[in-house]
Image (cartoon, rainbow, N blue to C red; front, side):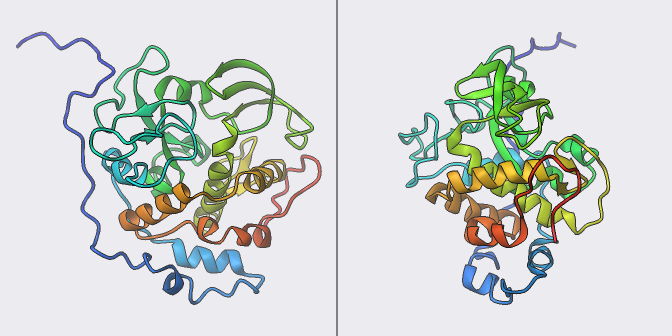
Length: 293
């Protein structure tokens, strides 16, 4: 047989496309979708869990194809990055939450990389090691998956998000280093900070994850920022700051609707950002006791 081809940052197999979504997803009408939710009740988090659980689960390979619709747009400019002009196909190409790169769908997916700008991959913003791997639907839940530069993603690793005080690595607005204990509510370990324009998006992804999977009974794992799917108070406090400073954008709303078409649920905190304060409470200091009701 012929010798194997040398490694390349470009994938050799054709991209895997997701199963076509239904013509009209049941979550597409937001008024009907949230009709039974009573936000005045103290069990709002449980109500939302009951609503968004049981979503359609994609394979990991299908995520490449899903990004082609969830993270591109013909009309809405992404929150940040280089995707301010439509590409050859008429869409704004894939924005990168960790760099200024604008990725061409499929042709620039990783693959192998040696430096920044080689290719993009599928970033679990809530690292999969925080729940023990790929055993649950969170592994392919688009509400916390984003296209990111492979090299920068590898630097982020599974470090928690924080306000970085002293950076040991930085690239186009992303930083890795020791955290500012004041701005990070008592946490001074190693963490990762992304650009301001994406901080609210990440906060709302985390609030979704805590709500969607917090009711499933997963106890793995106790990490610096989370215990199971409970976000620890210092991280909640930081994310609340990010949520307030970077409000929901048109791009984020469109992405939420596109994800609805694929996996048949929505992120309630994109549609109703005012519900965040009803569930997630700011804590003083760095107590490890979860603050959720």
